[in-house]
Length: 584
Image (cartoon, rainbow, N blue to C red):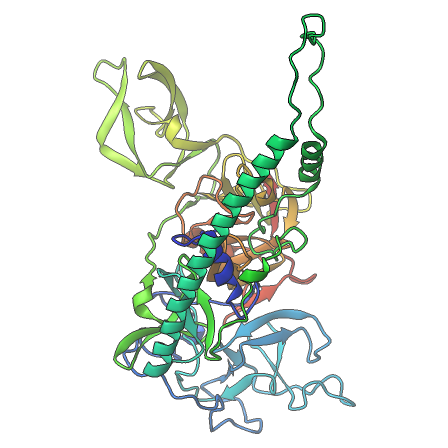
């Protein structure tokens, strides 16, 4: 996954990145989307229509009156718990020293068992007010650590909308269109906004001037270097015929200065770009020059300056001093005129029927024509009345060979009589099934990622159940982007996770709430990608990209299961993750 920040010089990007108040980081917790049904658990808890044309709520305490202090008998409706902290950890036992099973995000709603559980460490309890056990998924949350319990849960604008867990996209998203767009911690006043705008405009001018000065200094340094090398080079004297160097004799050695420079260059590692979702490698990062360092943003109500190409997850729309603003899922604010709403085409691979067998094909191009025999049955031609879209999956029944522009071409039959075909150049053929790894139990779920074909197949035992196109790491561009090969287990699943790289390079990116993120090895994950559509080709920094719809299918099907209301779940010995096998 990589989003290039464009439309600004390199130096501008470097300095802009320094203006961020936070370093590159990974937030494995986030989620929500345009429309789509909520889970049945949350059906009675709706926070209202998504874009609310109202003034944002005044800052107030997150505490809601009416929390039942004691334990009441079990009644209908059930007892609900709501997360009021950004992250609420779910523990294996009523003890903070026990395993972490997962977590809730701020605003999440879960059903609680009606009886509190005492802390397992009574002499020095880690949760003094006792624990709530979760009705779905088990596990415990501390009643005094960011949780409020209600029999009659009321909506509140203090909390973000719950994610659309039955939709391809959990949240609405926006694409930042203007460099150095301020992200506010709260809605600014008109005067504050004017101050920030003036400061940003001045900063852009200063950064542009610094970029020009740096470029000029580089040109002058290169010129001096060439002149120095020319002066250091020995002037050859004319040689007599007897002294002429034979053609077979090696050339004289390079000047010592050039040789030393070459040796130093060979010993210096190239700067590494981070693998998607991983921390930036510190050792190889170039140190910023002193004149490019910045003291930071001089406004405590501005979180950061965003570059063109960044993405935000949108909670709701508000009207502030007569203008449209977006509140993000994390509760920050950005002016709507600088954001382009993201719309995606809902599409993806195919859930395979019982008994489906290979060979099979999946269409790689956006649209391709069906091919049929002509009337004389001696040439294969286009049937312009029938086209197949990208991701169309079909069983291959056979093949034919015919000429296309005087070149022999293979056509795959998509019906048993062999009357309709597709050109092999337009599809990815999957010729045989992959044997399950020995770690997979009989009929167990597992995932095969084929880097060479750029396909993903989900299996239950030996039976394929789902097939689609993916985009793995772009190792052809840089070997550091390689998707790791081997057999792994899914380690954790997150409705969404923020991925960014605010390092000092032209590849700075930030994508809030990447949907349906499933980590399978270190910081490598399967996840949905809504910012590109080149599935079937290498594209990412190492992760396995899928369409949001495909990622959602794999997320729901794979293990460990995400309980209702949770934002993330961790694989444990009792709840192991699905096997992921990555091959060439």
